[in-house]
Every structure is written in C-alpha cells, then in structure tokens.
Image (tube, rainbow, N blue to C red; front, side, top):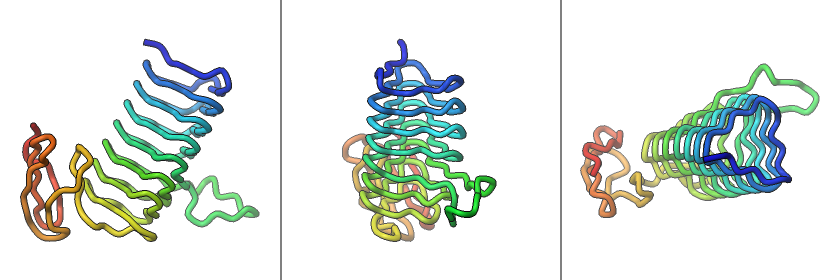
Length: 194
C-alpha cells in the first residue's frame, strides 16, 4: 500500500509518511514530520517539522499541527481546530526556544474549531466538544465543553456518553461495545474490553 498525495500538496524532503496515508489538496508537510500509517490529512493541513502523528489519525480540513505537538494513534482533529506552541506570543519577540510540548493521547477527539493551548496533555479517548478551549490537562475519557473548557461527563471508546457521575465512584457498561468502565476517586478506566 502506498501513500496517496494530491498533486497540489507539498511534502518536503525528509518527511516520513506511513503506508496507506492520504495527503489531500493544498497540504504542506515539513521535512522533519513523522506521520504514521493510514493517516488522513485533509485539505489545507499544515504539519510542522517537530511533529509526530501516530497511525490512523484523521486531521480534517484547515488544521495546522505546529512544532512540539504529538498525536498518538487514532486521534481525530475536527475541521479548523487549533493547536498553539507558544504560550505568550509577541510578533516583535522571538520565542521559538519557548515552545511547549502538547500531547494528545490515543483515541482522543478534538472537535471542530476547538483550541488546544500549548503545554497540555489530552487523555486517552477524551472528547473535546466543538469550539471548546483546552488550557489544562484533560483526563482519560473526559467529555470537555466550553470556554474555558470544563468537564461535563465521561465518554466511551466508542464515542458515547457514559452513565457515570462526574466525581466519586461508579460503574457502567457501554451499550454499543460491552466494554466495562469503572470510576474510582474521579479516575475513569476500562476494566474489561469486549
């Protein structure tokens, strides 16, 4: 399986792109980028030099993945969502030595027009709603909405809201997959995967 690259895309020498990945219209991938297998880069996506994108990620149209951003396997980046890499940018002051690392863990969803402020970690299978602004770390399976984002619940790997309290303890089963989830002291985990 080969990489499919639209003729309008620019892929700089040195960029690593895994088998089965698709690079669509007007994409620019810088030479230092490392992109896994089965990745889709939608129209007008930019991928910086110091970027790692895991297998099977989907990056929708008009997303710029700047230096120091890492996406683990299966991350979904909705249309026009935003990453930053400098916390306090100024046009007249160069701060390239101050880039902050941002980590988006396996299976997370970043909704359309959401913003991820640099230096945070978004947990496994977390779900960031459309337009939300993430300015602090997000737990695994958390459902985040608003500006600034606040947690309003828990989401399954399948992408459905779980019947669990926001805090404390509880147990539930995802009706779509049969996965069993447990909430202990505010930490959500899968106890048994179907």
